[in-house]
Image (cartoon, rainbow, N blue to C red):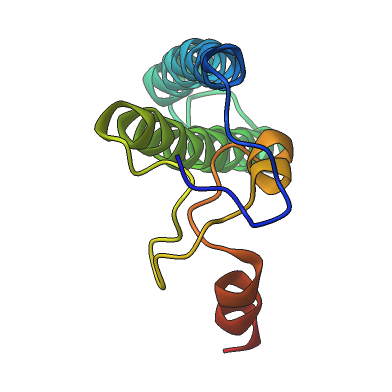
Length: 128
């Protein structure tokens, strides 16, 4: 796997640790998504305008439903990023910037293992 000039090459143990952390994160996110979807289904079964609910109840239910939908979507995006990082480890492209092909940097990946861009490309992307 690619590293910056001043960095030591990845060891099998380091790669294994990153992979293990990503797999744990993947499993945690899958559980969070299942819980959020279950909570959302329960809210949808109850309905937002059930008999006997006043306007505050309806508003509260709508707000809770929107929050659950947003949480589930956020977790799905994180899960997509984690699964992509795991796939990159398996196919040997982990550590290379998806934009320019240069090394992302070992320290950056250890701090943020889902990173797909080197710092230069990430800064360029954020300026747009």
